Length: 216
Image 1: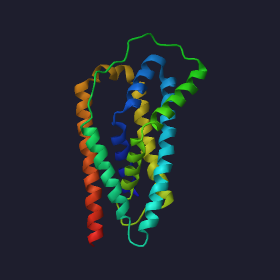
Image 2 (image 1 turned 180 degrees about the horizontal axis):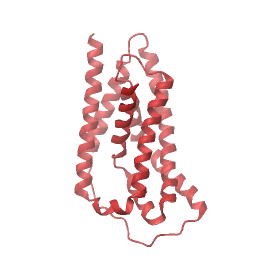
Image 3 (image 1 turned 60 degrees about the vertical axis):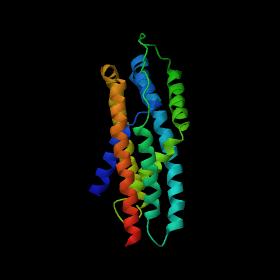
C-alpha cells in the first residue's frame, strides 16, 4: 500500500510540471481575473481529465480481458511505449516567446466562472495526447506487481494522483504573480527536457519490466 501511495504522489508531481496550453492560460487567468476565476478554469481541466481517465480505464479493461490468464505485461508494454513517445515529444517540444499581457485586474461576473469552467474543460478535451498519458499513468500503476490492480486500488491510486496534481495547480494559481518573472523560455526548455527524460525512463522501465515478465 505504501508503494501505491508513493507511486501515485510521484506521478502526480511529474504530471504537475508538464507544460501545455492549459498551464499558460491558468497562469494568465490567475493574474488577470483572480484566484476564483483560475480555480474555475482548473476545475474544468480536472473534469476533462476524469473523463479521459474513464476512457483510458475502459480501454485497459479491454486489454486485460485479452490478456487474461497470463499476466498484465501487455498493459505495461503498451503504457511503456506511450510513456516513452510522450516523453520524447515533451523533451523535443519547442518553446516560443511567452507573453502574459500586463493589464489591470478584470472584474469577473459570476456567470464568467461557468464560462471559464467550460473553457478549461473543452481546452483539455481538445488535446488528444491527454488520454494517452492517462493510459500510461494507469499502466504505471500496474507496474509494481504481477497482478492487475483491483478496482478499489485503482480508484485510490488515481485519486492520489489527481489530488497531488490539483494541489500543485492551486499553489501555481496562488503564486502566479510571483512565479511569472521566473518563467522564461530557457526555464521551460529545461523543464521539458527534465520531464521528458523522466517520462522516457518510466516508459523504458515499463517495457523492460513487461519483457522480463514474458520471459519468466
